[in-house]
Image (cartoon, rainbow, N blue to C red):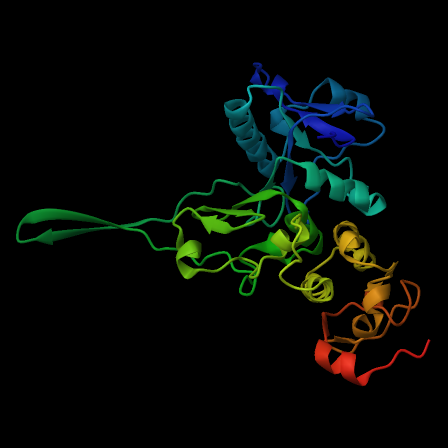
Length: 333
């Protein structure tokens, strides 16, 4: 797969200094790489600017790398060397502006990655992917015979509908797109990891599988990556309405990213649409696409986009019943 514009070359971190280096990819350079998704949080992570770009290419000390990145490097090296034994690359963003100025390029990076490592439980880049397990051990004295019982309390599972602040990354608008575009995502939780790909989702204790559910059920991921000659299980219109509803319910550091943060998904939807994309709506389903409602009335942001688009408000938006729209509404021009 084509490499992103800038990646971290992890092959150097076998040396005594434990360094990695920034690599600027050539136009036609390809390779395998793993992406990292994490919350920015209120902490200023290690940044690369024009003034230190050349120094970053020579090497970055592991001690200067935030804990989340450090753990991701460890994970990436272990997986990649066991699979291919080749040089390892990891996705690297130069600044927080990269994804905002080049949303389609960043979306393509997630789409082409071999895997996405998600720091789902971490509030910022200082969090560890491997927190201490919470275990409770009680000792009892039964009739003079010492008995030791080890108890492990199963933590609540990853659930898109009941996340609260327990899994901060799931509340972020940019990660919603990264998660759906990635071929596979490994979520690092509190006591176990969760796996999510195009066809299924599961966890270490297999409780998700026992419940017969998916983190997104029916999984939008499998529909977005649909490549069968058969029609998708739900319509393009329904898929888009679900995407908008879930995306607009998430948080963004910059409210102006409301439409930008979903443009990669727009690209995935184009093959299923016969019309143009019109600032949050599709030409061939424009009647029903116009029938959105905001959950809490809020003033429109006139400078952000057209007043008829959900891109222009900051609250969660949802759609009216398609049957009502199709039967009772006419588009006059």
